[in-house]
Length: 280
Image (cartoon, rainbow, N blue to C red):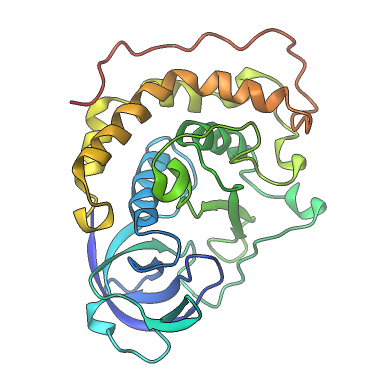
């Protein structure tokens, strides 16, 4: 995992974690969540683990990095409001999610009208991200942004804000059909059955224990505390690979009916187990 120093504070960002946009030593811009954010320090661990695993599956999650904010300690504006009072953002290692564009002034949208959504180049990735959010029990609605990574290219969707995977700081899995689902059914209009969730399901079901362990080793211990808690999370996440089809089936059968084009009335397909053991 790349470690970078923050060199410039650009501006605060919207959202419950009160992130800030920083420029790092590699010249790129990162949306940075701080250890003392008002949600929980473990949302940083969640962001890192989820980003690394989602990218392994081929999902459009921004590149992440460890950002050392110490060089900017005390910078004007690098603060957050907690309990009605302004506090400086913590120094040390923070989580950074790289902007999907090189220019921080490039328009980035968190909402598009229906006509605009139909023009997004990678709209099918919403199905893959739903499978991922069910695996990781994202307890927030799916958060996204839309932008053109380069001028004159088509809009693309990027999946952001994975902090509430594993139920934020609680690190448990209180499953519910509509958790992790994007708020508008139109993005799932291309889902016609189980084939629409391939190859993401196959990749999730075959994630090796070694990958989970390697990602966990990248997380700074100060982001999560007790290593036993992290080990238990890994074990449960590994075991949940075989539950994803059932969880998607619950979304399909929910009262919201987000997959209007699904024509398969059969029960959920049996998961393809990898046969590996849980993380050591």
